[in-house]
Picture 1: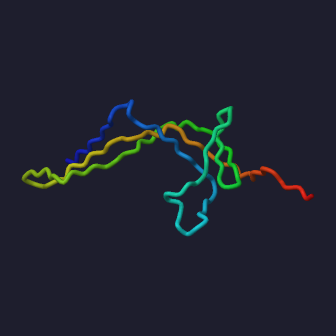
Picture 2 (picture 1 turned 120 degrees about the horizontal axis):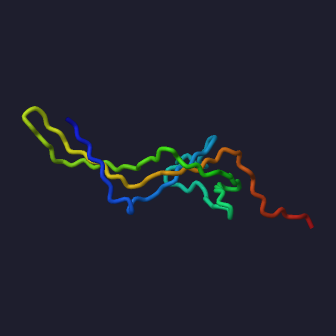
Picture 3 (picture 1 turned 90 degrees about the vertical axis):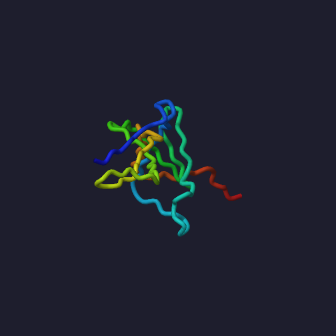
Length: 121
């Protein structure tokens, strides 16, 4: 029988993450991809509306509470093997490090940001 151990450091120690859902396609400026690069800045209005600023465009979103939260797990495999007379198994356990209870949904088209338009003299 395979036994999977799932544990956490404690409910007070768990980080709370937020899932971001974007409609459409995001392309990197260079061919290096998006991993490890800054996508944009996330701000909140005084009413609590999330605003994502990407380059010279802004996206307005809304916060949605997830019915079933997600757990972020880290897999730990020990090099030790538990052997009996029929088989050997490597012990594996999972550590819950964070929970995702909310997501921010950006489903509208980006709006351009105009700061100041220079006037001809």
